[in-house]
Amino acid sequence: MTMVPRSPAAGLQGARCSGCSVTVYPADDACPRCGGPADPAALSGAGTLWTWTVQRYAPKSPPYQAPPGGFEPFAVGYVELEEGVRVAAVLEVDDLDDVRIGMPLTVTAGQGVPRARPTTPVGEEGS
Image (cartoon, rainbow, N blue to C red):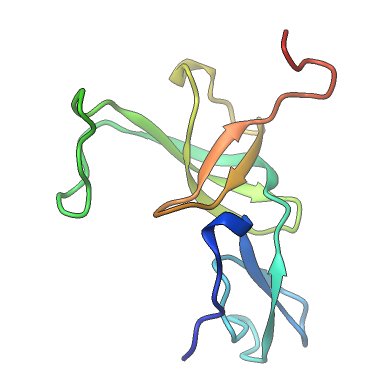
């Protein structure tokens, strides 16, 4: 099975089935529903938090490498994108008490696990 190539700088690269129209992330060349061919599809990255939890202990090392200040608990969750795809992501929030199911988030790809940040509603930038 060949994977559809994706560039971390290009954002979230998924795939859409040409037969049944299911969209998936990460990209694959075959549809998980019907087995038909899937074409590359850029995903918006805009979505809402579907569910989440807090990682309270350091992940296995390797591959995890603790930051210089040591391990700090962090939130992880599934973000449901506008395309209907649920993407697992680290939630980059200032305060874990602010995390709420349904909150608007923007997911970006990078090295490793995707990252999600709260979306600032239009008109609230810089406030």
